[in-house]
Image (tube, rainbow, N blue to C red; front, side):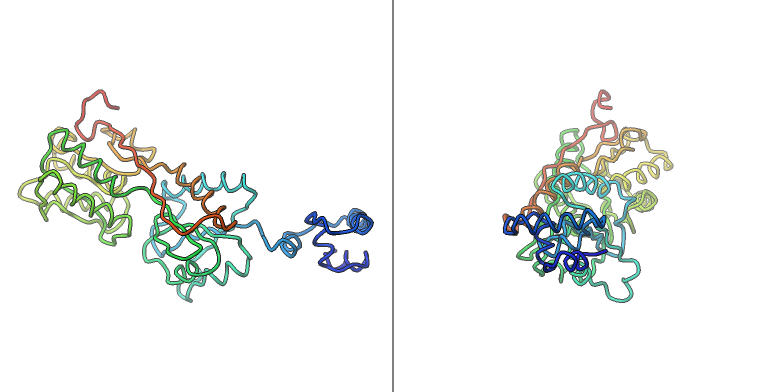
Length: 340
């Protein structure tokens, strides 16, 4: 049983059945009741495609985890953002359709074609590393898109991220307040847009406080994992003189660095202070508890949902939204022991 059969049994067009399914007012009551009666007698339940035929809306939002590397459901930041987005967009009447890219990476990913095939009303794009060129095609298309940690400039696109410049600035300011003047940085070799912003702001903050930028105190990890932070910190330990405090661009990198410092006989924070970024759950239970910068994942997710909803309803122009981060003080940065 399908919409065409219902239309034939009722002696009306498919378009008329679609309008009745979607409660359009321009259908005679007699016709409406006849079609509804046939639907009830046959047990027919309208499919999403039948509703889409009349409304031109699927109420589906595509979720694109763009990039070959480092963005998946194991990343705490993106999991929290997507959960908040899912709840908010669900309240607005939309379901999520997740796009997988593993099978298509070697064949030329085409997010735009797949978005059209599934008739999604809009897309949320989560940025990883080595983002596929197909994302640019989706950005430039008429399909409304909201990017998370990825710059999007299409006429029907917006993007949202934490204010990454302020993330680094807050850490350097706190180190400075604590009396530290020799500061190091652990970044990423494959610098994404977010990492570029954090490193640039770190260096600018050093200049702001007249602090010296030493190349041997700027080290870069292969990846985001704690093991990568560990290896980067071991590289830092080879310097003739060590920094007094280190800002790791993510919490996982910071955890690895703390381990490396302890193995080298250094006390954290007495000998070397450490701060991270993201405020994942493990920060409060690490030894010592990790000072970090909290990204408001709930706000980012909910804002992304509302912005995309407005884009889909042509009530929003292209723009970038930055969300204020929050410094969370704990013992690893050498502040008062009262901070837990």
